[in-house]
Structure formats: structure tokens, C-alpha cells
Image (cartoon, rainbow, N blue to C red; front, side, top):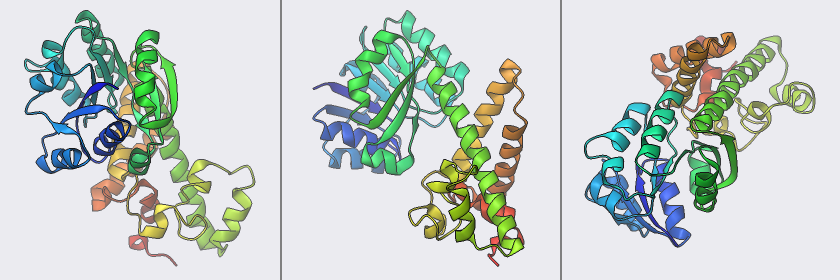
Length: 300
């Protein structure tokens, strides 16, 4: 088993670190929130007092951080990982960040003699807790092969998407599809309501016809047709609207950097920003149906 450092023990990182402990690894973790750090200790891990302490005492480091600026700082700052970890330490960044930052940090890691992959995830908190996440991985072949057994302790599907930054590219492209499709499904249900078509009847038709998609059949945005969807729990989040807005923002920044036309992605971002700015950023992203319905989201 491996000695693993884990930086960032929040809603996603905490369960991921706990699954590494369950797999028998010695996990040394750190988080700015002492409550999150204590949860990891309660799960059987150990707590580090600083990034340098963590970096100097492990063979593999996993990070799960909020944004690109945090990843840059934790890895390349004066007290960061690259200045303190041993040569050959395997670095796995599972944050969802901009492609540019992912490639910048990977280049710095390579110069420091530390193999690195970007490995953002899909599957939400439920997937993190169950160990069924999907990892989209960018980085060298050798680093991927070394990291794969560790990722398999936290996820079910591991896809090597290519070179450095390609994991982030796959994540933001996937979530742009998801954000757009959820709005489309939500619009269809709102239209059905106004036309007097029962939501279950629409689901029965579209789930077996050309309108079928994950946003409909797994994560249906209205209560009833899919009992496990957040719509049946008053949109308690598995993946918040604020997080969807973040990922759509990353997708738009990437599109602009390479001159790609993504008009639906841009419109999806505008709608999610409006929804979040109305105070609903903490709701599940499928709650966008409430915004599209109007009238304070009240169902007919």
C-alpha cells in the first residue's frame, strides 16, 4: 500500500480520501477547515500540519481544490508541493480548473522531476462516497499507469484522455453538454405543463424516443418520473447550480482561447448565472427548471 498525501478534504475530497484509507493506504491529509480535517482523521487517516510537512512524507499527492489559482499556489508557491516533495513523487490533481493552469503546473512538475496528471472527476458527492467516480485523466502514459490503481480505489471509470490538460478539457466539454441538455429537458417539461401534457406521459415517450438523454432518464428535473433524482428532494444538490456555472465559465474561457463557437454553451452559462444570482446557487443544477417555469418556480 502507498503513503498518500491528500490536500483538500471538502465535500468531494473528504470521501475520496476516506476511500483511500478503506483501501489500506496510509493517508496524510490537510484542509483549511479543521472540521473537514477531523472527519478524515475519524475515517482512519492522519492530519498534516502544513503543506511542506505533507509533501516531505508521502510518495503520492492528491489535490482537490476550488480553482486554478489555488492549484497554482499549492503546487508552485514558496511553501508549495514542488519545492518540498521528493523527486519522483506522483502528483494527481483532481480539481476542476482551467486547462491553462493545469498545463502550467504540469510543466513545472515535469521540470521538478515529479510525474503529474490532471484527473478531474464526474459523479458528484454520491459518487465520491460510493467510490464510483469517473476520472478524466490528462498526462504522460507512465504517470497514468502509475496513478490508475490509486484512482481505482476512488472511482469506477478511468479514462486517459491524452496529454497534460486533456483531463480538464474532457471535463468541461462533458459538463457543457450536461448544462445545455438539462436546460433543454427542463424547457420541454415546462412547455408540457403549459400544454396540459402530464409529465409522466412526456417521460414515457421521450425516455424511449429521440429525446432520450442522461438529464432526462437519470436526473429528471421534475418530481415523479425518476424517484432518485434531486427533484424529489426539493433539489437538494448532488451538483449545485453554482458548480455548474463554474464549469460553464471554464468551458467558455477555453472556447474563447481557441476560437471555438459555443453559442449554446454561452446561453447556458447566462441562464445559470441568472439562476445563481437570484439566490439559488446552492440548489441542484436540475433546479434550473424552477427558473424557467417563472412565477417563483411554482408548479401548476
